Length: 369
Ligand code: NAD
Ligand code: IPM
Ligand code: MN
Image (cartoon, rainbow, N blue to C red; front, side, top):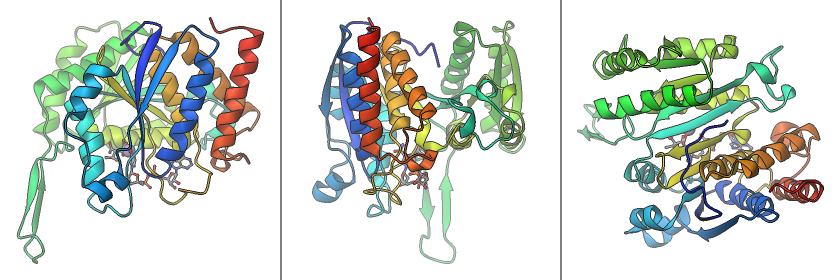
């Protein structure tokens, strides 16, 4: 997907790498491998600094997001390449909340960009759909909603127990993500924006989304804007994904619809995402989680992380490198040099090696820069 706003634009960038838990630690090194390969022939330098934040450190030291980490990432790094967090030993998921949601909130990464792009016809479960039919992007509000952790329990552990989780929506928060979706559409020549909410039931919280959407859309009369309730969107995106270019929605619905979208384009193993504040240090991660059910087996698909790294270098302003990474991924899909989830026989590292070799060969034939 084109048009992710620039952070750096120069020839050098510093990347914080947080592989995290489970398959996060298996796929992230493959993305780094590919990034190194794509930068080698170009006049680009990436400096990687790895951080061991995750379940092991939390269980060992009680530390989740270390003191001063947010400021360090903000001031010393251009971007963060993130794997996944989540470990069956940490039932509370405390470390993931502190680290992942903590970084989204504290770095104010209000845009969660989750492209859904079919890269090979055989990968979609939808009958008779091809690459040209499935190409859209979900913009998920990423700093508020039901994720902010406002709430509590009362009489916990008794038959009268009550649990409350508040849905927090600010005028500023709703407006900036809706506006971002329209701006993205306009800048990238996309003609349609669909805002999705549940304002028929959540009349207060999503009534605000309705009011803001009606106001902002008036500034973008060149864009065909439309509203769908989230249940209808889930149905429509499966029935006919060709209807959609840009979807904008709240935090929780964006989480759900992006997994649904991922499956339409080949599954979670292939889906990339960016947590972005335009112009500031931003965090890039595959859409999938730590997948404890396949951790340690060597079958984790690294392509989601690799495509994530393409989004990251695009954010740095390195369009040629982003395109080279995507070309390599398409080639791997074409030649079935992929992991078992996509019907291939390669393991995680073999896919990374294949991509790196592909880069080497292509750069000899035609240097990226
Ligand atoms: P998951 O995304 O980890 O896995 C869902 C299913 O997809 C599993 O069957 C898994 O094997 C498969 N899968 C996911 N990624 C794959 C890949 N790269 N290659 C092949 N198969 C892949 O979701 P889950 O099982 O609901 O969650 C597991 C843990 O991950 C939980 O602790 C959850 O909170 C966490 N999680 C973290 C993030 C994140 O860090 N961004 C995202 C989602 C879930
Ligand atoms: C995602 C994940 C996270 C989310 C979890 C791990 C909190 O599912 O990044 O999609 O819901 O945002
Ligand atoms: Mn999710």
